[in-house]
Each structure stands twice: as C-alpha cells, then as structure tokens.
Length: 133
Image (cartoon, rainbow, N blue to C red; front, side, top):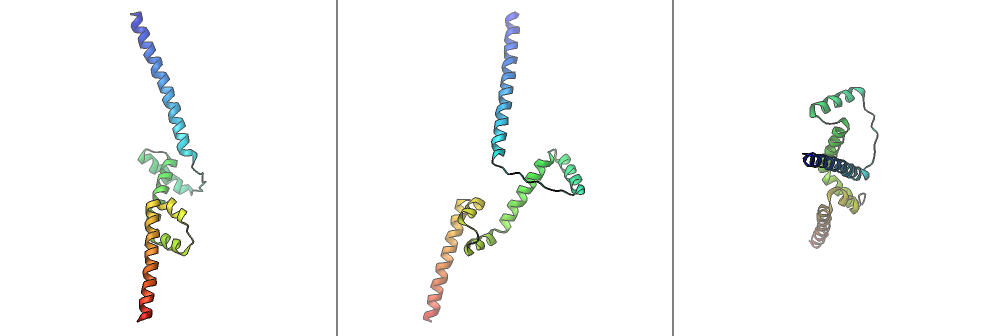
C-alpha cells in the first residue's frame, strides 16, 4: 500500500514537473515567435472598440489577436490586388528586388524579373522590326 501511494505521488510530481517544463517551453516559443515583431500603437474610435469587443467575444478570441489576424489578412489581400502595380514599380526602379523577394518570395520575384526582361527584349525586337519596315 505504501509503495502504491509512493508511486502515485511520484507520478503526480513528475506530471507537475512536466507541466512546468511544458509551460516554460511554451513561454520560450511564444517569446521567440514575437521576438522579431514590431509594435504599433493604434488609436481606435470608442465605437469601433465596442465593435471589436463584440466581434472578439463572438469569435472567442482576444481583441488584440483578432485585430492582428484581421490586419494580416487585409495586408495580404492588398498585396495580392496590387501585385501588378508593385511589379510595375519594380520595373521603374522604385521597388528593389529585395523588396519583391520579401513580399512575394524568391520564386515569384524571379518570375517577375524574368517577365520584365522578356518584355524589354521583345520590345527592342519589335522596335528593330518596325525600323526595318
């Protein structure tokens, strides 16, 4: 009987230690995820604050988490809508290749660069053909 109680106590201690270790690891991981983030301060209209509070209650999430996810989604949507315009700005030289890679990824940046080079070479060929006519 004493051995069983001792074993149960050891198991409980082990569970508590693992629980503390898991919490510590989770805290470290959360810190690492948010370490490279920047902090922005937003001024929100009181009416909008009430709306955000209501939305976050309905979605069972924190207000800041909902704002963060909504902002991320809207930024991604805007980038998708402006993809052509961003490519044109790259062609003009106002956006760097590094900017393209950061926003669209290396493969898409390579595709955009290839397309622009192809368009330039095709335009030069067309000018030569038009000149010979």
